[in-house]
Image (cartoon, rainbow, N blue to C red):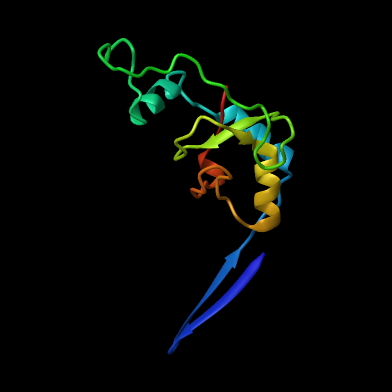
Length: 128
C-alpha cells in the first residue's frame, strides 16, 4: 500500500493506492477460466507470418503441414502445466503461466520470455 502527497502552490493532493496480494495459483485459475483464444488463432497467426492458408492460397509454394513444439517451459525447462502466451505475441511456442507469474512477481517484469514483448497480466491467455 502506498500513500503519496503532492503539493503545487496552495493546492495539494493525496493519492492512496491499496493493493491486495493474490497467490499465483489463484491468478492462474482466473486467467485459465477467462481465456478466450479462438480455435482459428493459429491459422490467423500463420497467415500473418506469411505462410498462408491452403484453402484460400492454393497457389503458394510453401505450406506448413506439421510443426514440432516443445512441451518444456523456456523459463525453467520443466514441463508446461498451463501453456500460455500474450495477446501481442506472434509465436506458437508457449511458456508456463504459473512460472511466468512467479517470475513477474519476483523480478517486477512482465516481458515475454520468447519475444520480449511486454505482456500485462490481463493480456495473458491460456492456450489449448
